[in-house]
Image 1: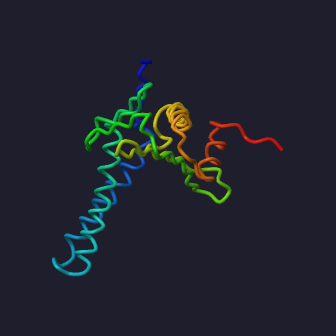
Image 2: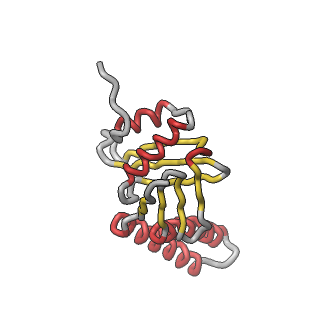
Image 3: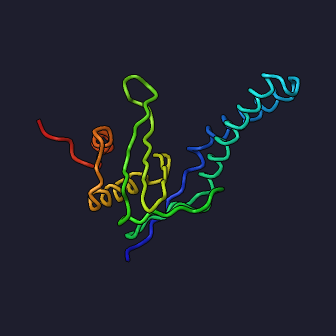
Amino acid sequence: MGDTHLHRWRPAALTGDVIRGAISFGGALFVGLLVPIGSIAFFLALGLAAVFGWYLAGTISRLRSLVEVNDDGLRLSGGLWPAKTIKWAQLDRFELRYFSLKRDRSEGWMDLKLRGGGQTLALDDRLDRFHEVLARAFEAARASDVGLSDTTHANLIAAGIIAKPGP
């Protein structure tokens, strides 16, 4: 068995998400306190508070999480949710998506979804040394003969994981 590589989400990369989540959650709760209980506005504010609270909890969970990658697989632990492990030999889904913030695709983020052994994990490129994790997961996907969508293939080329086809 090879070395285990440890990865964490960088706090600086998630600071904006924590601030946005806290302001949105707090604002929705505040509005809920201002309107009459039982009104449509109250339930709307309550619903928004639940959504923003879930977003904030997910961000806090990422801050506390640890991703361990080795020759056997990948393990996500330490957050607010139970630990999840995917063995490379059981990998049956590999999806890499890019979410663009600009029309020219110059800004955005990558999101990696892996599934295997009944577990699903989502990692994004704010994880430190994300490209190492991506490369190792892709290697495992190839070894397990996991099919790739055209979008995932194009995103792997954009990420520099696989070579761009020649002219």
